[in-house]
Image (cartoon, rainbow, N blue to C red; front, side):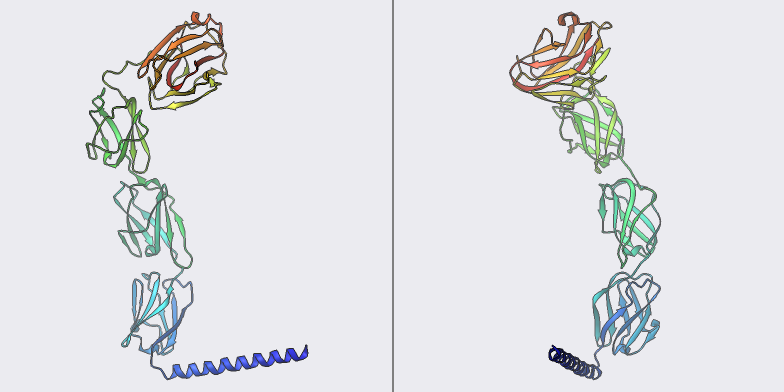
Length: 427
């Protein structure tokens, strides 16, 4: 064991001697060379305005040092010898390689020079439209790498950028909210502004004509309408994105053939939706239904009623086909004698004389029948009309004049298909 240990010591000594000889040879080679070499620079993490050192060989030949965004002539060097140059980092310096300028040519660093930069935001434009420029002011803004607008829309290319000012275009996907600013440097920062950038949205003031005609032009007037990406009509799954014309104050669109009456919704480029105050109506449409004295379903389930049905799927917020208001109940039956069953409430019927509802039959339902039952009693048979709304007014006497209504059921009679039901209640 002792011999092995001594052998290892000798091996280590020989290795150290060999490295020393090689290093000495290299030093002799360098000493005899007139080539300008940059060996290192630092310290790492220095800030603009502080000093940084460059170590190398024959540095006395350097006439200037080019940094990204700044140039320092030899006359401004703090120290200038053959082995050392010390400079003060200019405020406008950005992250990038270093280039030593010499009469014999450029010497460029292989590594990037970076700094610890205390970026500060002092202010920015308060409000803008998508597509407009905003100006951000502060310190060391040339170190900003990314600006993220509300709704996670990032911008990495800027109109202009300097130490104290940055100009950026508001993207069309942006919405009102704070800016999140990311910086570079050895200690990257993420800065969220305390105040919000207010991004303009479209606003709607009128619909003309109203009542309108399907497959003809509808004129929408308002402000910032050139920021509209699409228009949603009731009855359509997707917004209309092709327009006859579009300006900031007026937008003209062809009303789709399948559009239903109801409020019109503008869709901004950010995805934000702006709903009209007035409802769009159509020439030849059915008149509005008389108000319900008591509602079980009117745009949504009302007064505590729930669906305890089976053999069907029901969308109570459907906007594809509406008789009145903003939504209807879309029922898709499976053909297994399934039902929509209003339940969970006990309603005294003394103030009322009839149950009322409207039904629209989808394709393939013409002549099909639905059993309407109160409290599981005798069925009132409804024959479906395909492609049109029919209002039904059923006297409570047809259900046996129940003193209390605990459930109301709409049951298919062994056929699969889709119905729309709206405005369910009592008068």
